Length: 374
Picture (spheres, rainbow, N blue to C red):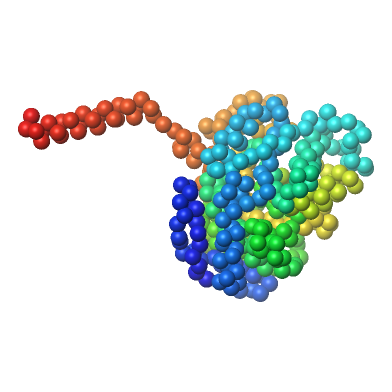
């Protein structure tokens, strides 16, 4: 289905473009256009919220240990270049957590660093609840994303508003005000590995995304998931998948609804804490006590610089503190790294520019002189 979509360019100029959106309903076994033209127009308008400074969520929170000012500098820099505003949630030193504050029946084998990681994420959930946010995006401080992140989230928004995976039709409020719908608790977008429900491979929405990484830039674990859900061959590097979350690991980037934050705080604090926070979230999803979706290939990926700087949870004392540094940093599962693009966009050669200007002026003067017959 072709529709006219308003798209904001990087210079915030509104232009018109003709875009074709297609989704795949595996339960029906065929490709579908996204509902009626009127619904598409409404979806596209709401999806433009993905271009705001919170990507269409109520807020964007990021977790960072107070002493990791290096990572905070990096996150604020890349976010500012991407038109995103971040709110810091301070990480927690697990050794500072009083024994009385650890959840009842918590796993006694949890390391202090794992307890600290859990507490920081729990503080982020509390922030969502206390501030009555409808949704929030929660990030960790060592990540990278695609330089076209707003376009990626606009495309995701349109798909989620019209998802064939929903158990109930969107409410009037969702249609009017929720760019990603509200039929989920967690939206997983920064997993490092993943596992799909073994008996529900029929539950998947596949859609076109021009910003999907190529096969060469996609890690094997995600290629495996995609192929298990029916996406292979030439579709790799063109399609992105949305499916019910079942077994994601890592918490680099995920969104929560207010109800999701409440359910997370209930199951991973009030009642228990069975494992490191990412593993316990996966178990809670598998238990059916939490509802979510996973996006693959992921939208957030680790930025690795080498050495001990790459981990605050399990640093390797045999490694040097400084490895390759940001100038040699790498990330996978992205078509166009925002961190790499940022360096090029901010690069300049001031004195070279002056020299070039002098050369240009000299050539212009020579040309003028020849015209005057001099």
